[in-house]
Length: 181
Image (cartoon, rainbow, N blue to C red; front, side, top):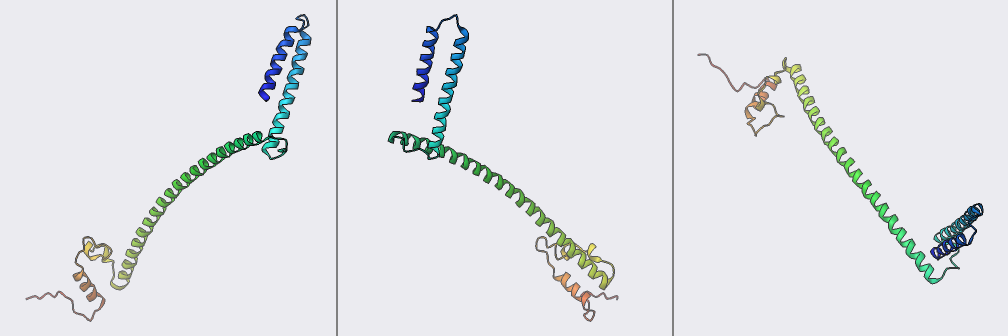
């Protein structure tokens, strides 16, 4: 209906221009502006009425067909809103997953550092204990199979444990005795 009115106004305006006296351009400009102003006022009124309809106001004056058309427009708008909302949510989820992956990597690195620090602390404690009981720390001179935290390839630790047992208990005889003879 709005388009029909605009078309009517354009044709009537064009007809008025043809009928008007070409010697009075000032009056034509004034009529153009007044017609344009009237047309814009009507358009504003129509837009305000439509906004009211979208807000659920003044629906009594609408016919069944107008109400169905309004419902269709609102459904289409809702679909666009939901689509945009879902897109934003998926982007947000993707960004959060990337952050989670980065935090997990940092967590793994920190756990690895903690294990390394615990190993160093254990080594330092053993060395300190041995220095208190036996003098200089021999752990730096021990072979890898004698260090309990370096159990590479399942090495045999029986000899090392026997030697350590003899070192800890002075009443036991050493396993290896040398005879000079």
